[in-house]
Figure 1: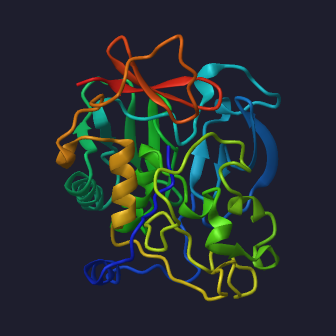
Figure 2 (figure 1 turned 90 degrees about the horizontal axis):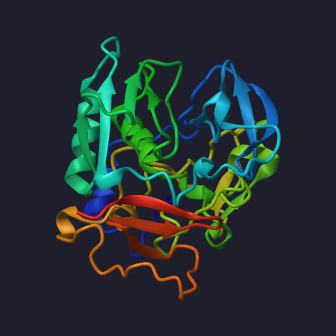
Length: 318
């Protein structure tokens, strides 16, 4: 999966778009906004993670959740445990979903879905009997799994989770990490660990530090990304936890996907407005060729991508 970013200056039209919903300086999506759990070092496959256990859920980065049975106390070689930005994609660009009938303000879900469909090649289809699907349901806060994990996966939305926060959580569900977790972030930002709330420091690790596989599909950190923390996220003293390299603070927005978000998603989920098909231009797998991480091949009618440990299926060629 990927961290979204952009390779261009923010134009004036986008500045006008995002000023509609700017996050409160210290606001950030949280699965359990009123609770701080205990920290645990556990394994997701071969990757060691520092996660927060709150109630019956393991939480990473504040709003990314794991099922209890997804994590183990020792490394596991099971190949179906690859949750990284290069795995866990939704086949054929289709995310099946269902909405809990008790969820309040369901219009925010429909509006968020409409925004995704209008700006990317990802499509959302109401579930009938599909086994893998997103389930929008009430919760203590805003949270999501990252990528397709198999079976029902919840996106929780408390009453205070806005349409923008719903767009953000859908971003996780289709495979986006938080923007500040990209591995080249030090070229653009500094993390002030001395200002971070106790036991929240792990929320500011890169995906590589978290042991996750992945790749950046665009070239620079996007300060306009809907997936970016604000400068004051998890601050314990009112001082910024993240600043630009020049020392200045910045706001985050939750109005919609930035041009960089869209650029990255359309690389990850090609098709749609680009007019291309999933496997267009991709060569068939060859046993005589060496492949690097991120390489794509076709094999028996499906598109695969190489991670650090294995090939993962992206979807069927259409």
